[in-house]
Length: 251
Image (cartoon, rainbow, N blue to C red; front, side, top):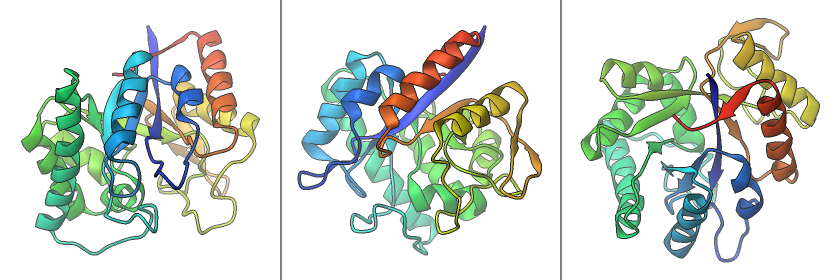
């Protein structure tokens, strides 16, 4: 059976700021990464998003970040091992407590924004995140950038991993994501995004921003819910993948 996971970052709104349309996107995905309150969400929004995911039988994950509401978790911070460990540990425990209160089980952890990108390249950040997740529950799956330091460290430590690729982001020649500060980092055209997804899951490769083919392992595809056409894209992608013989399902 050909299986692929579609994941989306969710529950990132604040009372005074709406990020994305979670109810419109949720029916088309299989995994939801729910903000823990540090860059967005938290409190009642976290609980509402968890219940929405449960309604659609979507696997629920924690989406920890730097404590950076103003920068939406996209600003880099220089922290030591203990600080990163505590940062992730506290956030995953927060959402885990809500999950337990609802008699639900947390499925995975996916870092957000700058924390995600830094852990993809830095061993110290990757180790702190992996250790924090393992301390909480060794059964949790760690979502990370395909081929990244985070995925490699987790695999060495015996933690289950899920290699993530991005439908709407362009890649550099080394397999890392093109920084958002660069022109063309985000793919705006739906058809181009879909063709990139098909290449990654069917051929195991992605064309970089310079035109080079880069090998890549695709187990879960990230859809950005804050794009204005996110729901339409998620619906179209799910229909096309289903037509190609893929079952949309979390790992």
